[in-house]
Image (cartoon, rainbow, N blue to C red; front, side, top):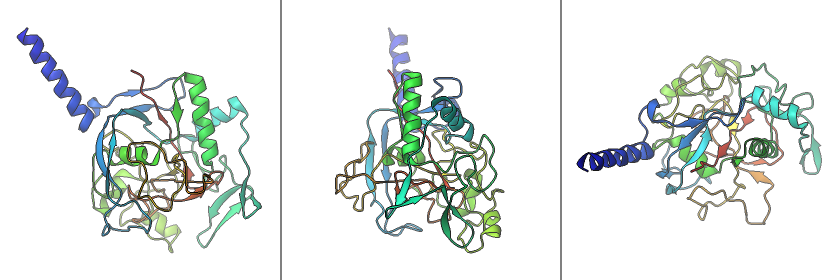
Length: 316
């Protein structure tokens, strides 16, 4: 009986330790539902402070003020951003047709691009050709929120598990992995290139007008997912490589935004024409890559630096 009690106590301690703050790769639980499906990491329940302090480096107007978020039920997050090869498999199997994007009533043909001086849509650019060379293991870009949602629905039908685009709170909770600093590695911008493909000195050599981190990650554009160090949850590229769509409608005021992991999909006008990307990309400097930062883009908008990863339910 005493041995059983000791074993139960140890098991409870192990679950609590793993659930609150994984410290080693051995404690991280993963699964893959099918060949070619994203590898998923089980994200434990718990609490973390999201948002940013008024004095945080690079803080943007309209960012969420510091608030405690609590995830009461574990969920799964893809270990990596959805790759070009994974998205191609979806496109070939479903023959999916992407929605047309519009701006002020005018169609936006192709994908948005930055040539070093200005941004603009280029008709010849798309997820197959974002304007720079990519490998099959790079994150897919030039995909809209609508495209990302369609991919998640396809995975759900294919596997029997409910997949989705993660909420903004889920994304930040998973990115922080228990941390309270601007990035999951801490506060030092010089350490960024160990953990992320961001706007570094190599990027600045090509785009000298853009702000950059004071380090070199070796890549100007996207690179293979999972190349850099993961956070404590075992997730890669939660900062950099590609901006990532979240499910939340963009809200100007986040005072009443959910903090339980649910997505805020009902905005002031009961419309959701814009969503909320997070995480920054290979083009992002210090200010635009922090855990708290967010962007605002139309649901059918496509950009050469914007991709996604999926979240999923964890079955009992």
